[in-house]
Length: 335
Image (cartoon, rainbow, N blue to C red; front, side, top):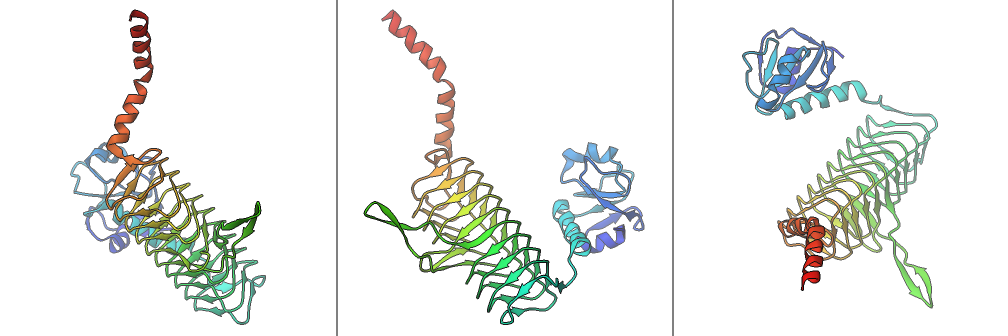
């Protein structure tokens, strides 16, 4: 890679302080930047690191007069840096359009323009692949499924039949979309499987991490709204509905028929029981277990999950239990 600062500024916006012709050959954090790299700082607390950095140029939130190297001054350096990285990624990491000769694609599938399909991909009957979709090796896409424009499906992903995936989706390695929900009816002491004939519908701009499972519904559909982000190793059971722009951090476990609102933040290793309703704008702290519905805007933590200030007081008391125990023993002896 090789960019002049003027070329970078055309991508990030902002104002250049210093030479516009400085050549940038790498991207790095402020801690690791070396000669030829471009980096950024978010606020004044990082100025001391910027002053000793070997970077060729720095994206900054305001002009730093004592910084004796070129700067790009923007309102939000982190966002500007992301824009540049996105552009860099498109130019340097994009796969060439075309279909690998080992891919197995049904003659009844519809493949859009500019699509890249890797080795040993299997695409079944009546699948619809949009324009500029990238599909990495060993992906399976079942019959009558649909993948929207500009989506990326990484290696070893399995997308079962009748699944709908929106535009600009990103699905990372080894995830499974549309496997059977865990539904059984007990008859005479034995488990009778309930056929899972519904589907999964995923909105636009959704990103799904590695090793995620999203189960199809029994009859209707499991729904993942627009802009949802799901981290690695999470499990979404059948008939779940997740509202727009909600985020699930790693190891989130959502049981069947749960309804989660918009802009909800679910931290790491959270478990939510079946059939509860999580209102819009809730925040669920790490390691919590949610056993009942939450009103919109709730901030909870703990097992069972409770208002965060209540849980904090409980945690303080728990730390004092040994001291309280000793005090009680002394009281018993003296009474």
